[in-house]
Length: 238
Image (cartoon, rainbow, N blue to C red; front, side):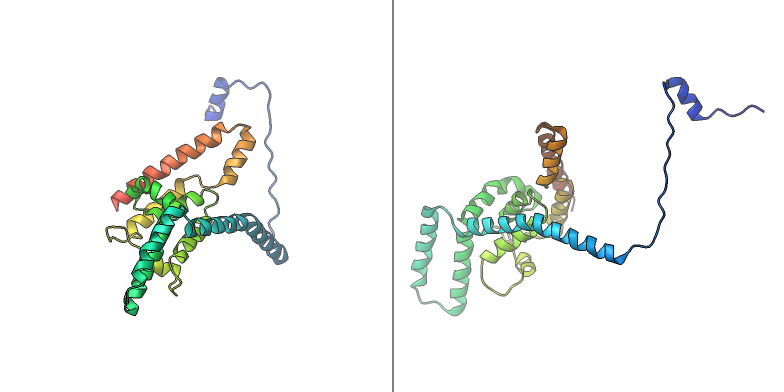
């Protein structure tokens, strides 16, 4: 009885090998982990996160505080004059609180951060995002972890009430009165972060390995475009 011909024997007629090589893999001995080593590794990884991502988050938070608190002098003076005149009128405590909230909201919109967010809002509005999410998307290109810190900074500037970030985001609305954080918007945002290239360190490593900025730029552009269109698709489906 003849021996059956295997696919490997057929391939040798297509690919001519000049020399033979042997692949040897030695499997390690599996043992239970040493908890001391596990603890040391966890502490070291935590230190790396704090020193690397933590510094970025701190810097971005301080920068956002400045951009959210200050703006062009002409715009900020106009806001101050508008509400200084309104403050001279006798108002009830409820009306005064409402006026103060409007003042802080308008002040934030006319700050440097508000101007930046408003400028990109037409581009991200089809995804269900507002200008605050737009600012967070820009800052989180440094590191994804910065997104939460950015949102906390932006929403904390609006007032000194006791509401948590979660409660403030739940009450956030668009100019037409519709809620910002809906299920379609949340899914769209998660999909965006799945595909987008939002890690400067990764781009830096690609540049170092390829010794050119060509591939990091290509990687950044096509992954951002892919993230945008996938988020748009998800938002319209839901």
